Image (cartoon, rainbow, N blue to C red):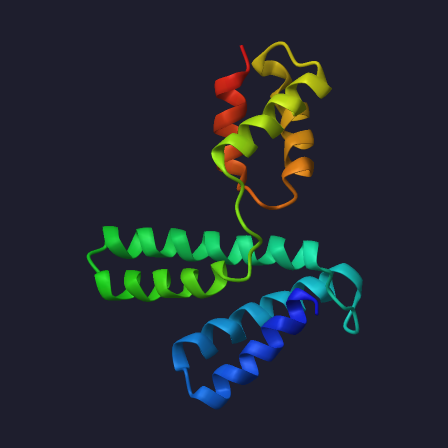
Length: 150
């Protein structure tokens, strides 16, 4: 079962359970997945899991930014709503890498790229992101690459 099919299935289950918060979140992500499929290959396109994970990460990032804005604006109820949506979406992401696994991937990427300075960070990031396969966010990868590069 692909990730998009799992989201469709869970959407139907949320409808049956009358879980309004989960239903709204899943509808938004299903819409985002459909837009991504249309952008990629047209209206009848089926989205692959890699693209679906990318869309999910983007949706989570948007909600994190919104929650932060709501907290700064003194609206904790709206921030809590955004954080609830983040928890629903996070359930569909692959398991995150441990710090040790992440450090090993970045070290391998540095060795593979032959990087000797921070000027070659782009090449290292490209290799590290490919090796992480969507199980680590770019921010944490970038911080670790900067830390490990001389």
